[in-house]
Picture 1: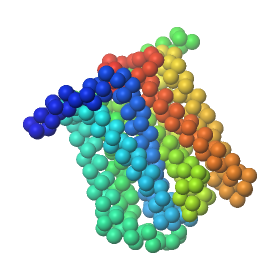
Picture 2 (picture 1 turned 180 degrees about the vertical axis):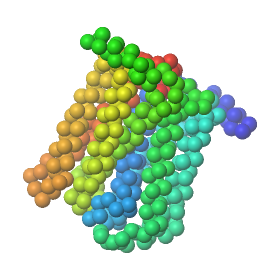
Picture 3 (picture 1 turned 45 degrees about the vertical axis):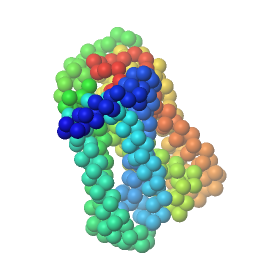
Picture 4 (picture 1 turned 135 degrees about the vertical axis):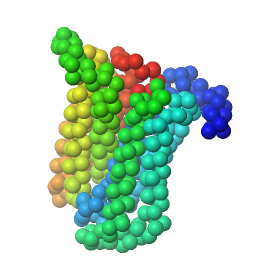
Length: 167
Length: 167
């Protein structure tokens, strides 16, 4: 914890931090806006595949829907960058914030879930399925975990100003 | 008109939403508004990307099923939005940023219905040709609506006690 506090103290001295926390007045609003656009890209473009594996849009093969993944990843990267900028701008608002911890935990769960999907062989099996084939149980579970964890990320993200020591 | 907004804002329910400090009042409504955004704007973005040529192997008609997600998102946001409006009626109804947001929401919904028509009748080449233009207009509308919504916390009349940066 001490190391984190030291890093935060250093972060607060950086020009980037000063820019985010007021010197560039449009910096924070711009990042908030991009953070919400990234959110929509992630929820929508990953969501179509999650819902497909839960039985939606059966006429599309899962393989064909995979082209949406890069757009969801782009949304995630956009949010990773803007999220990092928020943290750099005001580290003290996040460090002892329970909501922030929970948000990170659910991002972690979503990440492990994706790794399991790709490396655990689930993706390989659903990729070979035709439009009307039955979906294996583990794929359905991966989808459910994905949807729930990303919605929990939104929940805890939105709770940042209301829970814990936040602004 | 201002008296009416003032009256709405002074209702005990509006006051509870705004001032109770309970996580089940303003914070949860705001969270639902974010989740609804993800469902409406996110899945809409996926359909628009498909109409613009991303994931060409996905049959356009198969995406019909995702419109129910978008309409759920819309109604979640219409209801949560009305509650948020009640809590701060005098500020929001006099905010030009809110006006801009509503303009793009209305345009976005009109275009969404037109896109729904395209996706439900993909065999009609005339409709399909209009799909690209509609997709671009739709993406613009929702990006602008999201942007204006986010900027309500920074531009125009302000409510609440939270700091100027993060809301």
